[in-house]
Image (cartoon, rainbow, N blue to C red):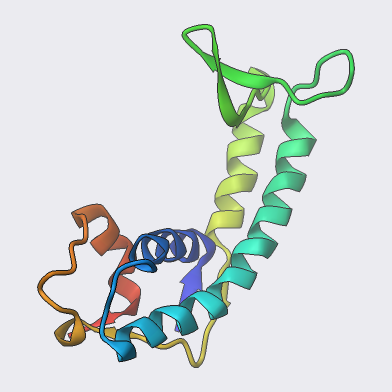
Length: 134
């Protein structure tokens, strides 16, 4: 199965929310196996994202990254990008998110094996779609 980096990030984020839910053994095992397979890709993605961020983000006089601000308040983990470089920054990030990795043995989760008590938001359900089977 081929997944884009953006899909991998979404799946990992959604599975992290399910990770602490008591589930049947086979489902919990599949979730752990999927996370073990995908988390290294997330780590590599983050390294490349930091390199892109460092290339474009504004720095103060001391060389520290300048946080983006909304209503004059700093937004954690969000950095200012000069307007004239924003398109290039967004383009590189989009290219990184669209890069694909092949996962020939990625486990899936059967929807039939999930108890009705498991609650998933529609947004997370969409993120999990590539690893769910009917």
